[in-house]
Image 1 (cartoon, each protein chain N blue to C red):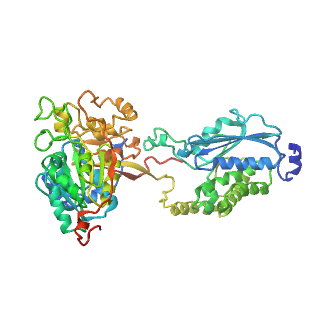
Image 2: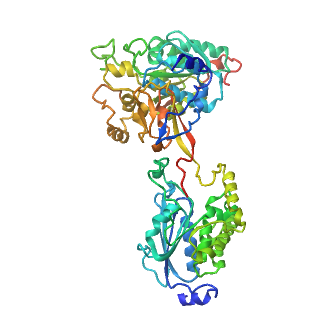
Image 3: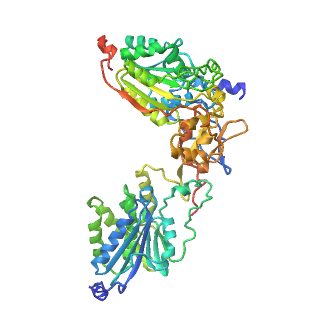
Length: 326
Length: 307
């Protein structure tokens, strides 16, 4: 089947299918990047294209970057994309999406989830924001930010990974393949127990995709069937997951903190020497002080090795001081 | 601290927490809650009397952490201790504690266990207390296989009485009674107790607190005489007399047999290189011996034995 035949088979309300194309799927480990690229490849293969797919997932088990390149056309020789050659980018994480933007063509479209997964390296400075996580205020051209949780609504309750299927729904409006082809590919690749939720998220994403196709930029949210209830559904998702919801505009986080009982500390220097991130110092009274909280990773070594039982390490609510401005 | 604030300090429960001195760029952080093991402390006794950087404190906290993971309150656990720095730590545990005469904690503990077999009895002793003055009691407690758990804090010196030579002091080490360097060979406490008939023998280090917690919990579960030797460091007498640096130097010297850790520690300018001075030989760690035979209570057919 050639691309021309594909064009003949495509529904008339869709634009003519491309002869060839390049996609980048990006995200972090555990978000289903590989599954999504398999699914897209399945749709393309079913449409008669030659498809080649590559993936980079070395650190995925530790929440690291996962990138998959998908190329299709009459005949594809190389699996890798050159920078500036991607027609579409689908990114499941905000920063990973921005990182992949160098692959985008000038007239390409990047569908980027607003979901944040703060990597451990950025966590070291998460309170002072010295290593700033990119905000939503400056959405680059060509990028469509999709609040996947808001769009997915109750479909993602209990299974946040399902929310990313919304992006596939939005992508499906940019590609000239019928909805059935996508649903069939989802049925092939998604485990049966998650099928219904994924199909629901896909349909809601497809509905939101109308605005994507119209070239509307900015954050796409609340286009789900429950409309303005999108924010409430997000809150209920957070409650279902046992996470307290943050007030509007502030991102509340649990951050590690160290308490040092000054009257018990004898200034032996062990915690200062053992801390891998050098968070602790001795003050002029030879008492340990938690001087650099922004570096603390909560490893607990200081508490384990404190001979005076003076140290407690735990997670506390960051009072919004490091909250992301949106 | 003023006298007024001292009066307000409660004897039960952790000290009150005021405004956090921890600030970062002007932002004040909330305080984390006290760790679980803190509920097992006699807060009126704290802070404890151990010297800065003393390894006993680290082992003590690890012991409390292990106990906090197992017990809500220590009403059914009795701690028996003799005389010495190590034995002082039981005074800070909110449990049934018995501070006894020098070298005799195991005899008191044997009597306690036979009278109250339903109690979990833990003996905390040191190398001078348990191996020198109480050495005879140690081997006989092991021989009888009384259902006790004995934790021996081995810091290779008599810390409390002024840094005298102990039966575990390594050859060449300087102490207040060996100014020319120690000429004697030390005991291997774990092997001694194993030979005497203990049914669970383990050795741990104060540096590896998590491993000690596991070994200690296994010792608590074991039926019969269980013995855990912990290598700790005396900073004030052993460390200073032998010019081994401060508590951190001594603590990390335990880990320097491992090349990866050694390489990491070598980059820390605050730490002292302590390999030029006499240090412990590399010792086996972990469970050294485990077997099963009838305990003394079972042989005497005491009710409540084996609980």
